[in-house]
Length: 352
Image 1 (cartoon, rainbow, N blue to C red):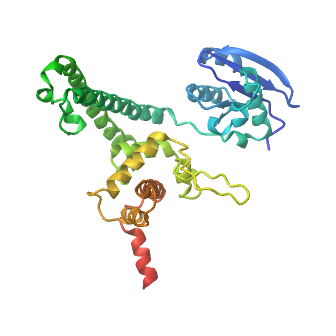
Image 2 (cartoon, one colour; image 1 turned 135 degrees about the vertical axis):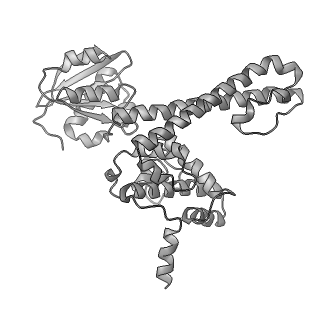
Image 3 (cartoon, rainbow, N blue to C red; image 1 turned 180 degrees about the horizontal axis):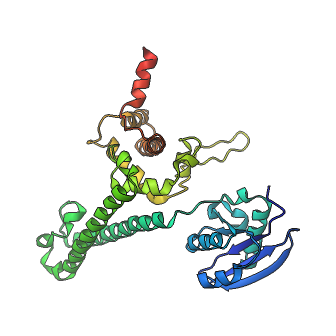
């Protein structure tokens, strides 16, 4: 339950203006304010005030705002927006109402906010490099798909090749489309150079600032990008009491909607970091692919595929990605080297 001896406030964050509601010790609204979404405005408002517990929803401005409030002596609680249906599904929704509801949730029980912890400044900077590289990769993919789609209606087809070599296919373009598509291929070449530069930067960040990524890269299929994304997203690995909890944290466990005798099978929740979940699934593609080495992860995926059924391969990839996340978390906690057949060793002991 909340501490009734602490003044609580709720902030509904907007891109230009924020709405603030402050509750007194009796739970009554004593002040409502609308201020600009700038560090200077918040510093003027909260500086010198009695320390209070302040609730807000996670968003673009919540990292710097939470840090600013903490520096001013207040306790900032950043709520998980996906869990606050009380606010999103409110038929009388408004900025004032949202701010008051956040303050009341904060006062009654902060755990109802499902509070999250933002990364530190160094981690946010490193993650920005990952996101920037990902944006360039998606832009390059969109241009490549566009070029291939433009060529097909003319009766031609561009040859298959990796993305990094696509920009060198000028000679394969139909003569009528060369003036149109050559600038696109030139742009693809430039994007490839920039992507490679970011890839090298990510590798240096992992080696210099996050040496634990070197340990994670022992697992086949886990490269510097996935290893760094995992370390930055997980943060403190000991916040997970059980290693398997990381699967739910990353949205790779089935949703559940059980009532009475009904308990249907549902897709995964897709909660948490979409970027890291995508990276882990890509790793599982390699592990289960033709070049994946024999290990516990591959064997578990093959067992799921052997059962057959609808979408067996898809379920196997997600299951392997979930097991991979659990394994990586365990390695972060223990610091032990990767053992490809750790589970098989246990089975041999049981048989013996």
